[in-house]
Structure formats: structure tokens, C-alpha cells
Length: 141
Image 1 (cartoon, rainbow, N blue to C red):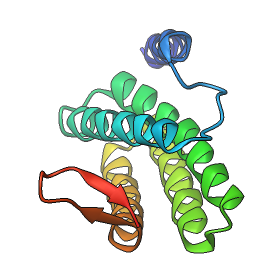
Image 2: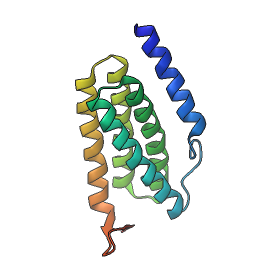
Image 3: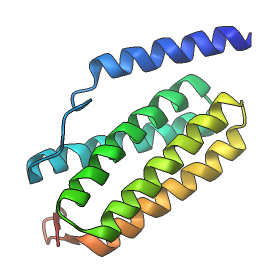
Image 4: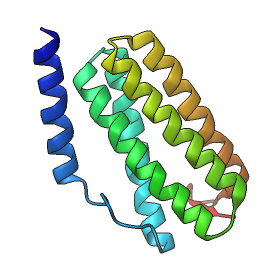
């Protein structure tokens, strides 16, 4: 049974990676960054749902995708020389990796805890580096 779950995980991650619009693409412009943030939001929602369900295959795929995007976000902030934002992104990528490891170990409670750490890193960066506009959208500070 475990090998069946592992195979399903690998297939799901490979499918997701093949469909990923930003895989291996650097975040250069504010538009690129906005697209990355939108995808992070989508993947985070999918991860929360899959942990609550629980669906190990979906959680593993979302966590892996989040780690990839967050590494790109880290590089974006490093290029802009914004140390705290780069650190938040690095810590968030590490938390996504911890979710993946917990899911691989079939420990969904630990995956949930790591996901809370991930969310806290995102919220810290959002608080420090974005403003909400009157129309409900956001802009970077």
C-alpha cells in the first residue's frame, strides 16, 4: 500500500511539475512576482485542504510546488537586497520542505504543524512588505 501511495505521489508531482507555468523561471518583474504570489495562494489553499482531508498525494504535490516557488521568491528578494523578505521566503521554503517530509512519513499532524509555520512566514513578509489598497488589491511597499 505504501508503495502505491509513493507511486501516486511521484506521478502527481511529475504531472504538476509538467504543468507548472513558472518552474525554473526567475521572478524578475513585479508582474512575475504577482503571478508567483497568486500561485502561492492557490497552492497554499490546496495544501490546507489536502492536510485537512487528509490527502497525502495532494499535500505532497502542493508542498513541493510551494517550495519551488518560494525559492524563486527568495532569489527575487535577494536580488533586491531585502534581507528580511529573503529570510522569510527561505524559512517558508524550509517549512514547505518539512511538510513534504512529514507527508512522506505519513505524519499528517506534523504536516499540519509545518504548514502553520509556513503560513506564519508568509504573514510576516506580508505585514512587512505590502500595503492593502482601497480597492482590496495589494502593492509592495
